[in-house]
Image 1: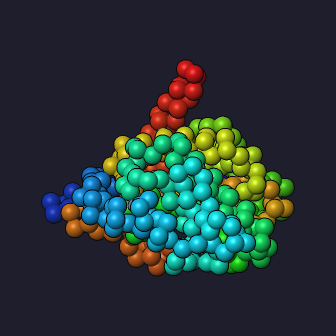
Image 2 (image 1 turned 90 degrees about the vertical axis):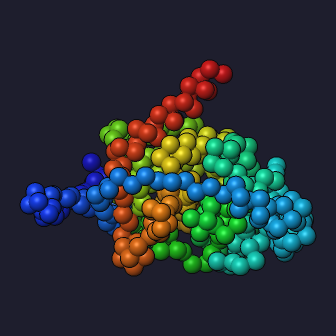
Length: 348
Ligand SMILES: [Zn+2]
């Protein structure tokens, strides 16, 4: 096997006030591509309370929201005509316009719909498909005018716990001259993997996980869903677009299939009490690698009644992810929701 799932255990021994022995395990796992470690730590059995934004949505929606339809045309900026003569890119109910506060040389914001607050279970296939198709169009328009900006990604902060500053569902499309740390590391390591093994890493990962079944969730069309071995949080879902190595390869059906899988992931999050997440679509900038597009999604949350952040010194400074959950125990929860998608399509 060319992919190595490496892990090690540490045990901490101490005793309670009555002299009874306590043993606590920390499992350290190493990402099969990057070698970066992640820690599976003792789960104190915390109950996750999903946040409720109904009241906040009433205060921040409609006339108070720059992304709601009554303000969108008046308050959001316009692209230069070389991107689009209309100033904004539209796809169904999705609209793309420039981010007033950009993270890179090209940074579009995609608004999903007219609905200011969309709860996880309310996202439709149409909404998600249109938003990602619109994001794709923007990346293609940028590629046509700027060959230096090679590092493209589509990103989603859903709800404030994930860094989202506006409730109205929106995604961020970045195209930069400079790769992010993740983009740089994945490019370097995938290149090295290919040199060593003669194989493409994400294709190989997908095939290996499908055979092992331990973290294999399922397939919808040409998109495979896996739980990451060394997770970046308490859940870490990885989708591989097995037939799309560049943004030009993705077609409308792929986005429909992606939307179906994503909705099953949303049900998986909801079942565990998670409401907020970060998502990233990674598009390789090196066409020679023939690397499939992949997506990662992790939940974001607060802990306990003090609303303690889920990021502490570990993630913030050591850059070491922590998880209370075992990937192999989350996988069957997600798989159950994927089985439902396939049952639905069989009935048609
Ligand atoms: Zn709004």
